[in-house]
Image 1 (cartoon, helix red, strand yellow):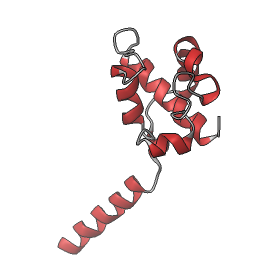
Image 2 (spheres, rainbow, N blue to C red):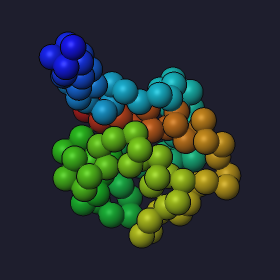
Image 3 (cartoon, rainbow, N blue to C red):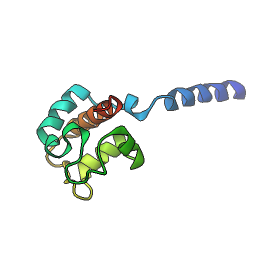
Length: 111
């Protein structure tokens, strides 16, 4: 019985951790693109960063700065950080999830 339980847990762990976080993003990238265009595009057009060119939304920079996950992007957009303002009061949580899904999708596709 223990061996079966361990095998089930191992299979679950393999399935859970085999996909990149971007594949597990819960939001809707199509809707996130609309929200991004209306709220983020001025500073992050094409995945760039107008205020800090070293910290783009490109996959390599997201990974470098530990932002390549839906949770990290949601936190950044909600609360802001550094020169980025917080959007938690102006966007609904589902809109922020959609933006995270869009950013991850675009990062995976190379913007």
